[in-house]
Image 1 (cartoon, rainbow, N blue to C red):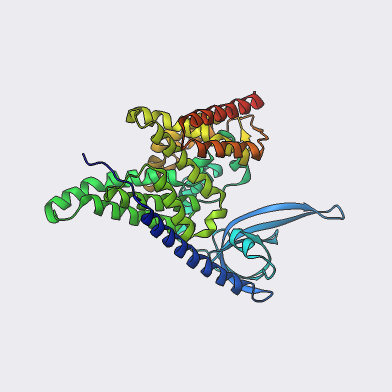
Image 2: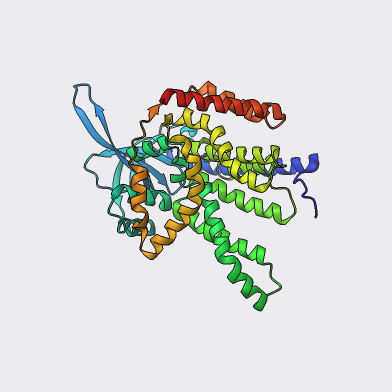
Length: 425
């Protein structure tokens, strides 16, 4: 068996890669800066955008009156995202394309790259006949329970959940299962592989034996996943997973070692250089952190059997990602650790639920989901200071060099778990 080789073997390889990344990043930032100057050239500017979030908010005025208004998050056709407010009587226009006049003349380039707030006036709302809207209507028609319908719409079309459901799933520790991420892409890739493998192998042997079944199957799978990615509007975590999938296969096909931090850093730098906005996305960094800890486990415990690795990885990732969950979300309940089991079961539930919805029997699992969703979690909001998360990150980086730091990191994460349990009990 041939041994896998490293991608970079000498300083010249690193230099060439650094030049490539610098060039791509420079071009991406130059384009973003050009768009920024166009947006801020005048006091106001016409913008075409898609509404990705819409929710109501209340505010007490200086006179004591309660004012109700709506907050919209939009993504423009130039790629930047921004928030604005609208009248409380505005109809539900999520996923609709709108034309606005925005007043963004005073924002900085830093604000532009992240996400900013500006005053705006909606000039035109285009009728929402998108495929996503029709698909969500199709899902909704199969469920009597509105919450379950919203859950499936979040799973399949990345629809934003109401705050109540977001809090519930955060308390149960399953937010990563509800928000479409690389995990979902991995499950879909696996399902597509088994659906395509045998029919394609049959056709290949008969009609085009000169073709590579492995390469052709991968091309078909990636094409389908790319269409799905574009359909969802390229969520950061999904984009990360898609790029990793493509880079990973290219490296694997050329005999380069995949499970290495070198591969992870290469993917990270490629994504940031092509889409620098993702540098400011928490979802993107959480997604990268999850993959980092999986790689960390596989590198340090590669001597374990594949079966044991498969069993231990969910426990490992849950424990080491817990400090991030506590620092960012804070919601915790005694049901939270059960997410380890839910994550394993989800690999069966997700493709099965898709299959049932395609057949029109999406409601078959509703009674089971109702028991899961309406449990009284007795959740609490835990205060987990940012400096504690910084300690976890530092230990994580040091774990790359010494296994003793890895054990210390594990103990630290377990201490965070005990701290969370203590606050709930």
